[in-house]
Amino acid sequence: MTSEVLPAPEPTRLVAQARLTLDGVRAMLALAGICVTLPALWACAFAAGGSHTALPHLFYFPIIVAAVRFGVSGAVATALCAAVLAGPLLPADVATGTPQPVLGWIVRLVIFTCIGVFVALLAQQGSASLRSAYQDSRLSRALVRALRRGDVSVHYQPIRRTADGRIVALEALARWTDPRRGQVAPDVFIPVAERTGAVADVDRYVLRRAAEQVAQWTAKHGPVIAAVNVSATWFAEADLFSEVEDVLLRTGLPAGQLELEITETALISDVRRATDQIDKLRGIGVHVAIDDFGVGQASLSYVNDFHVTTVKIDGSFVSKALVDPRTALLLTGLFSLFGTLGLRVIAEGVSNEAEYARLRTLGCENVQGYHLGRPAPADITEGLLQEAGVTPVHH
Image (cartoon, rainbow, N blue to C red):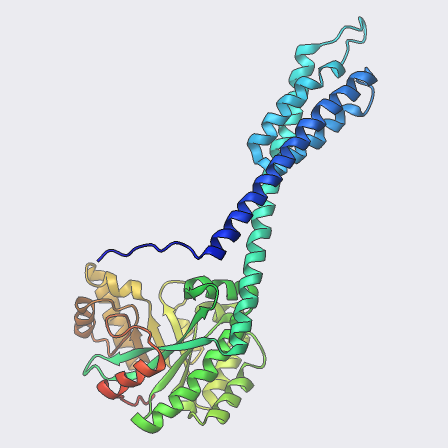
């Protein structure tokens, strides 16, 4: 069945039309200003009658205006007009007093054009940066308001054991539905939150909601691990440990049922702080996982030095293992090595049955991906827990 694109609501269409009209009016006013300014300046320059005056420099004004408003093409066109109109003020030969039209015109045209193009490029770059910063700030403020109102929901993606398909953990993920914007994709608002620093608020919110929910599920279905992402922003804050400890006390979730997933960016930005944070969390029984292992600078030394409990293998290795024997051998070695060290290994991004079967033959014990379950709201996840059952994991 083909989907039909519905027309935009009338208020939205009117707003869009009003913006287009306003932009058009502004463009016409700017163009009119340039058309009026050029002849006026030419008249003043002609009346002044001599290149010894400062009046020729007034031609930079319309060139700059055109460069800012219309970009490179407007700057070049205005520079050409300005060079032509500035003809009466071309340098004169000192000995004879006769004008030098060709050389002077070329020099003035080159100067005007270079200035105009340079200003246009700077204006475009600055405008794009300001527009991007404004959009980020606006979306970030809306996200923070949504968090305060409780409008951000938490979805849960199961992590399953390959031996029997039972659920061993649930990764908590933020999902945002805005009244005006509709469903805002995570790959849209999470990067914005990271750039503006609001991602720490998202992390705190998800941790609190996930801990409350998993504590309730534990009472009904048995213990299951809540896996929560911790950004580099929040991980670098000194109060991370106290906030995590406070959430555990308030929700009643045992520390052994909480796993914080940390990216390598958070680890390598400040190694000493990262070591202290992880040691304190491990001291109260909280599990710590290295997320997206293998795609960046993370090495085996990180696994050893930071005393993590879980390693999540990036999904790119999973897809390659089907077609590349070397990748398959690498995964087999990693699964065996991490198992010997007593670490739990999770292969991410499992998208089909072939990848799932391949990981089982390579010795992977835990998997996660759309093939095993997409992120779902709490009510759907609870039904999944009843159907699949949970398997406590002991480290």
